[in-house]
Length: 466
Image 1: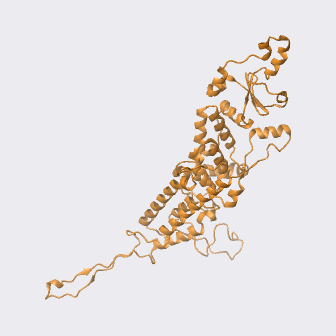
Image 2 (image 1 turned 60 degrees about the vertical axis):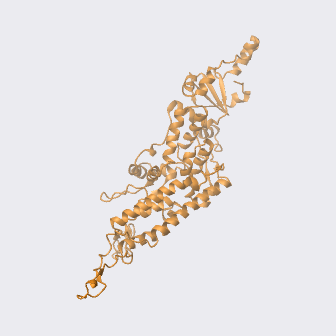
Image 3 (image 1 turned 180 degrees about the vertical axis):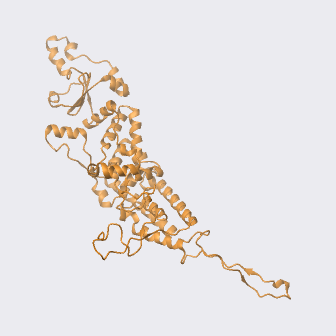
């Protein structure tokens, strides 16, 4: 332990973690935390070893100058307790102590089903939720995982990794569950509940990930800082779905509890003002390369599996085979000339075939909304492929000339618009199943390529820093 300069005693900010019965003071920059040695040593191997070391005597006692000793001893103690100076940010220490004393605070939105979440967001607290730019738990998680790794509190590290993996998963199935949690739907009639898959294509759906999880740039920064390669592919793909200008503009760092405390004590908003955070040039180019590769993969799939897609050979909408046609006239005198028949071919007809027409309709809709433009989701190839599959089962396509919900004058005018008419695609079960399997394999293949596309694997890979 070393004695800090006197100004630090005068300007230290006492936080909420200042226990009257505490026996150790932790100093982080201009903040002081009075805690308990036993609580710190119980959870942290580093603090346990630190407190086990013999404590040096104050200079007055070692020199034997009792006349001056009392004054010097007061300098060596803060509020009657020894102190330790930490080279960490006050905000990180605040969240770290909060996790040790009160448990790790995380958002319960991560665990509730999407249909219940829809009701909560729509009817309970929409103003507060819809105006929140950052997840309130990310400053908590990032601080706790930093200091838990540094001070060897392994249980907290594992809990932080678990909660991060919920929003930035390793598997495609977990990613789809994540997308479902972040897609909010309006109420539906009981006769037509929404699908269980995340894209759903239902009108009125809102995709609001930033209200429940942090901006991907913040997660990428944390992953690079803490060497967490497992969450990088999902975070980079999430970021690549933004437009290039949005990626370049970056984001802002969320305010922390300590920042708000300092701003309140100093009556200044400067401490609580968000700071901008942008990618480095190399990392920005890396994100754009991954974005381009995902779009190229999607274009290749559309060209191969949707453009002029024929129906399955076992398609149930194919016309029945034509009768056999004799190829030689009968000749009773010549046994060798027994009439032979050639079955008429069973061509895979694409013209006027309901399955072919339906796949052409899907192609037009995919091209129209490629990259999720019509849903406000730029360059989301995984979502676009899911949309293509969901069109097979949808029944809410509008007939040309009919009126979508919400249009018209609600009967106030006698010249009412045509009634709303919807339809679904007439695809046979065989063609439908084959196309679903093709899309499922393509999505799994695409997910496996993400580390390669974003430069996370390969010879001598070095991920640029933010």
